[in-house]
Image (cartoon, rainbow, N blue to C red):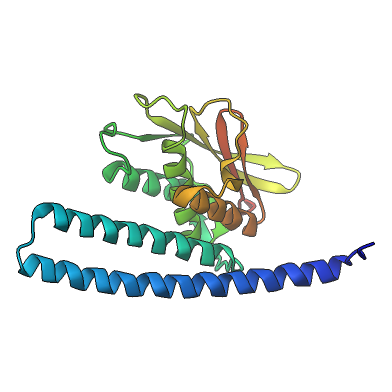
Length: 231
């Protein structure tokens, strides 16, 4: 009969596996980058020799595929490492959401997009907290783009992001909800499917590192973040 491992031994084993996985992914990324260099050199030679357009298109597709693979490997490496948070006081969550939404609407991630992919619905007041502004902004961006690309969403309608504050037993919190999704029980924060899935999983870890949660409730994605207590 196989002996049971203690929780401490199991935890150490998982940590060792995580470190080994990150190193393997790091080595794979280096190999991908080497292939990118060779492919870039080949493309320059082909352009100089005026090769047929279909051959140049093939090498460009190869480079694009290597770029996507390198990006995914970077995300895996990032996910395998502890989340480091650098909090700053008096950061306005409301303002961060509006900035992220404006950036996405100005540079939509999908072709044939609506004029406004995202619309912010809020009470308009500031929601101040101690946040790592860069990390939270990137997390909000990843969740927003993931929500836009989710199957089952009405593609002819803008996605509504509701922002509000609430008072709960744990203290004041800022609530961000992405409305207009289908009623699927699929959890995008734990799917790890493709680049968008990895980014949403990383976003959830950033939110959790701030002390709260990211979840899906039927047709809504919800992020809760702690706010500073008002005097």
